[in-house]
Length: 192
Image (cartoon, rainbow, N blue to C red; front, top):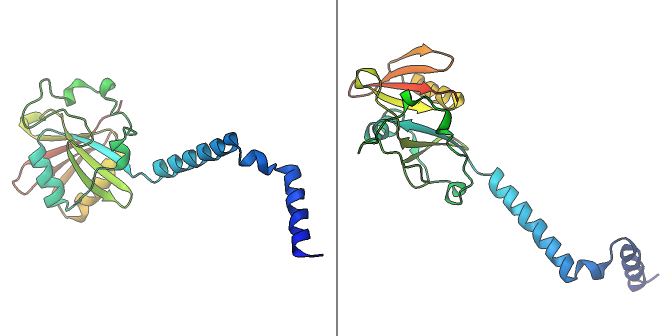
C-alpha cells in the first residue's frame, strides 16, 4: 500500500465523520473564529490580577504610607480596568459614617481606572487606592476596605515592617497603625 493510497483512505475515513468542506466553508470559519475569540477572552480575564480597592481620606498620606512604610512597588493599571471588566465598587450598602459627605481636594471620589494609586501587594494581587473615605475620630486618617483578605495581607506587611499597630477588632477587622509622622491611620473593614 502506497503512502498516497493510505492518505486518501485516511481522508475519506475522516471525511465521513468530519466533512472537510463544511470546516472550510464560511460558516465553519466563523465558528472557528468565535471559538478562538472566546478562548482568548477567557485567557485574558483569568490571567488578570486580583484587585483590592481601599478608600482613603488623604491620598498623599496614603502614598507615603504604602510606598514609604510598607515599601509596596508601584504597579501599572491592569488591562481589565482599561476595558471596564472591573468589579463594581458596591458602595450603595456602605454605612455613610465611612464616606465623606462632600469630597474635598485631599479626598476625591473619582473611581476611574486611571485615578488613584496602584501597588503590587502580592504576585498576582494589586492594591488600588482611591479617595473618598471620611476622616476618623480626632480627625485621624482612615483607610476603608471591603475585603478582609486585603486587610489581613496589609496587617501582615505592617507586622513584617515592625510598625506600631493595635488590633481593635478581628471581625470585621479594624486596626490602628502609626506612620513616620506619628499620625494614626485606622484600617477598617466594611461589611456590605
